[in-house]
Length: 356
Image (tube, rainbow, N blue to C red; front, side, top):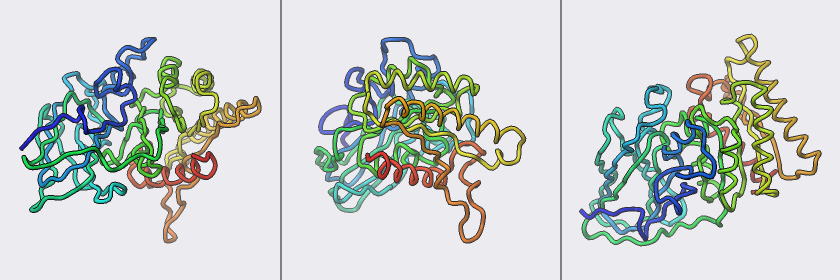
């Protein structure tokens, strides 16, 4: 078996916006112009949204993974609502035509206890000619990954090409990072990337998407944005914080990207909100705050800012049975039913209203 470093040609790396300058699997720059919030800086080492793509004629494919020597920012939290297959594990997709990728398997890191592991992901009796997509872990950092192929394998650049150079930029908290999809290819940014056929940057930071100005300045450095999606309500400590910080965040971003579509995504209304006194009032108050921020900018002449409530297109019932409240694992984080429905609605909104 021969081992290949995907940081070299003909492999292509996607999903790391600052990789060219830093050469590490990280979602924010190593040396930003201003210090990042500590939590964001730590969570930037988690590889949500990263991808490896290549083409190969091969019979066997194996991964060797060296996980980050740096502890994850939230390693002390077990996060039982997040599957082990989304933490420190890789998804494998294959394509026969260089267009539609089919999910194959996940490199299970058993119980998340191994800092180095080797996993066989596919083995054929006869050589296959395929495009390969490997998706990085949503949670946990990666120092090094090697791709093992049988000795006779031939590798080349991927057949699959994105439609253009634009990037879908997703900023928010744990939900945007991928909680609680069962694996990495099923979160919001991963689905949008596949459905739009554009590179996506997952800038979801667990419990730490708070619309801080330092983060806005770094995100504004990303070139060729097709759209900026912002969902920070769930992480803001108060309605007052949300009102002040979100407006300032958008102001900072607009200085560098005056025409880029911005879509603000309020938190969904969950089943608990309809039962616990005070929760619905807070949810609607925060939704009104975000709607006013968008409306004020529109009235001031900003034609490319929108608000989309993710629960608008969640089916209320299926076969006559109530279903709208079944989209999370804990009343907050989406399960895959939730991720599929909210991303399907968002996809239609971006395509038909925002014209992505």
